[in-house]
Image (cartoon, rainbow, N blue to C red):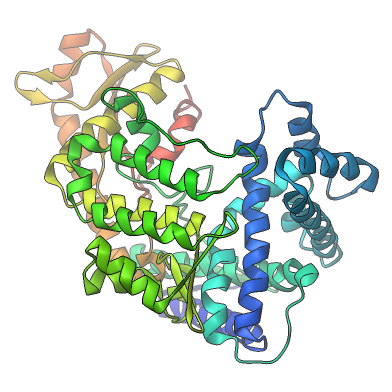
Amino acid sequence: MPKITGPAAQALVEREIKAHSDGVIGALARFDGRRAFYTWLDTVRALEEFINLPLFGLNDAEALAEAIRLLRLDALDPGALAPIRVALAAKFGKAFAERFGATVLQASAIGAAFRMHGMFEAAAGLATVEHAVGYFQSRRRHLAAILYALPAVGQGKERLERLDTINQFLPLVEHSSVTLTGLYQNLMLARVFPDFSLDVGAHGFIANHHYEPLDRTFIEPERAGILEMRDRIAGGAPALEPVDPRLLFSPAEMRNNIRLIEAAYAEFDLASTTFGPVAAFVRSSLAGCRDGYSVKLGARDFDRLASQAGLSTTMREQLVHRGGDLVACTNAIAPFIVVGETLVSTVTFLGRYLYYWKSACLNRSRRFQIRSGFIFENSVKAALAKQGFAVTSVKRIDRKEFDVVATLGGVIYNLQCKNNLVDLARIESDPARFARYNRQLDRSYARALAKEEAREVLLKHRLGIDEVRHLVISRFPVATTNPRVIAFSRIGELRQRLGV
């Protein structure tokens, strides 16, 4: 297997990026973009429901929940699916049950096709409904990218049939979109590591360095997530409006989410930032939701609601996606998509944008930056305690500050908690810039470890233990060869990684 390094390795990655990007755009271009958009939108809704149903829509103790999770897709039994559809129709309505049933049939069929073509890893992700939930979660951004791209790049006349959507687009996602994510990561890694190399074989290449930016549930890291903040809501949870239990998504749920976000981050006065006007606009735009999921506004209505909410021209532009290359579509965060004369969104896209904008507003606050560091330390302590570490109360010795100090098996573990913000979108939009910042963080973390080693005697004297191990826990993953720099997303594996 030949090995290539340096500029030759980067050039190979760049050629592959172009080939796969052109392949995706070419495949989408043959469709009638507007019609295909709405057909794919219905599929995206069905997939969102498919993901959320076992996670949030059912009580785990329900027999129906277990029957759905364990339903086999790789050897689908229509007799097992039939009573599930009946139960879902009674609980969530006939249309919901039909969408779920269609998704099961399509997922089963594409899984069989993957196996037939030797794509066994993808096929394994579609073995059962439980497997498929994780599979579709991991590909959400790629499924959304197709939705963002279709109106602009779909210049052909081919019709996209609803029953054929997953069959048309999932192989494209699997073959090219997911591959592109890895290729851009390799392009960044080639700029980070001088010894970066590719082992080239008949079926592609394998890099000698890897980078995993997401957590186990495929969520990007953030300085202080809402789950960490909910317990800090002053005065308890805010009053929420009733939500129809037959709907997994709804405007009422979206409005409740806004209330929860505002309450969770009230100590940082979030509502007084530009989050307030954006939240007001989202609330009013929900009047354009007629089916509980999609939101449609004419250009005049959009401008009127934006004016009433007090949005600047720049903020309005950030709310609307108007096309772009595949990288722009894959990393798009704007909730509205221009489709002809209509601006189209969904309650999930609006929720995702609000969550993004919440972080954008808070990350500019020095007070939030400081407080989120303490919140992060508490999350690290909780993760350590869960694994059997004894978290000490040590915070300061001889005017020297320590983040988290724990003990286990006669060893002191001194953890520096680093909450430096990393924009993961730049891996694809600007890999060179991402690599420069990554190298800066890596060097900074190495200096932090050296600093801790120089003063470890303070910990030894205070705790009466002679062995000290120093670690950096980084909220945002860093591409590094330093085994003592650990991403927080992997802290649940800390004991295994340390061999203790």
